[in-house]
Length: 122
Image (cartoon, rainbow, N blue to C red):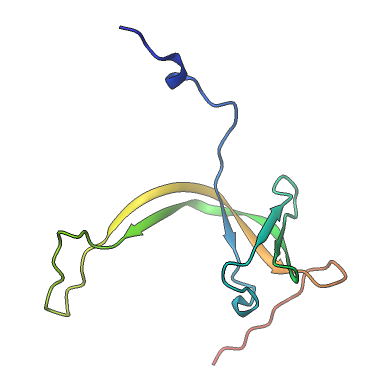
């Protein structure tokens, strides 16, 4: 029996997942399917350029505990939708990754500083 050594070889790199937090940004400024460039992930202040006009500067934050990222899929084609509105169709949830860091972005002003975005609660 021959063992494939490539299957057991460790990769030459370490994979790390980071959550990009854009909560302080105005989503109306980001057009759908806009091209973006994420650069400087190995620096203290990575940048995210969205389209030609929106530049965001990020700052790493450690999570409290471990954050888990899941993917959600709808009901299978074999599953019938219930007629009773009180029961929603079931969804399948699969774990994708765990992460220890959040990259929180803020809008960058023309002079290169981070802008404070004020929100008004109704």
